[in-house]
Length: 342
Image 1 (cartoon, rainbow, N blue to C red):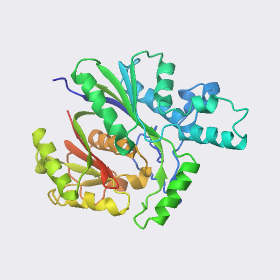
Image 2 (cartoon, helix red, strand yellow; image 1 turned 90 degrees about the vertical axis):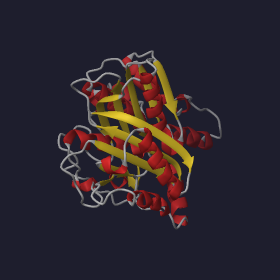
Image 3 (cartoon, rainbow, N blue to C red; image 1 turned 45 degrees about the vertical axis):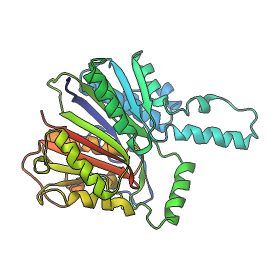
Image 4 (spheres, one colour; image 1 turned 60 degrees about the horizontal axis):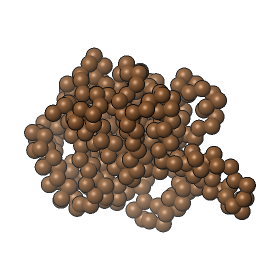
């Protein structure tokens, strides 16, 4: 079975981490209910003429994808796999608003054409002149994880030797306003801001000098009680010949809602000195926020240090070899990701 190595990684998020040499040393605080991504230097990756026609998510995705490829010294990937929960919601909203304002007449098709969920993957391919396998997964809160699984299968089956995989979501305006209104009406609404971001990773079947870490395994499942999640955790680790005591850090998607009990239930299974990494207070909550958590976990392995801003309980270790990530959204769409040093 082919191995799955992460060779390059790039993140555009609500934190200033795209071109940051230090890892989360200066944290951007967000006091409103929206955490907008900090724009990268898009001119370095996209021509100004093309950039003006692109929505936020497309610009973020193209820039992060090209940066991830540059880090891995890869010019052209064998496949592009993208995950997104809402796709290009900005252009969707623009088209619907124009349709209403103009009474469904005299509409230009541009916003409609650019509103599809696979626009980011398509624009990446156009910019790279890549005619290879290109798929977008739209599976709500497991969209990124679904992309990781596909990338892993492509490498294991020998259909690709290098895969560009990522997760992208943008805030939009009308959609977020409606979601925020629903959350306010719900006593169990989230307390972290709504966010956006693009996170891409270059993965290959061969280890190299640029290798960040190895992706051991990914699983997703739809509905489960906290007790059933614990059972699935132990089965997942057993499948990968790991046990709880061998996990050096546990990454959780805590967002302040009533379903954080899932994370607390799992935390109780680990030994008392296992560091816990939290990230959604930094990135905001969105369907592919787990991609930011994945990027953060990779940085922790590469730097062998957890930033204080991400450290949940103040517990640290001198060495990090194996990290487990767990995410869920409102008690559904659960995922486990296991990564190791190599």
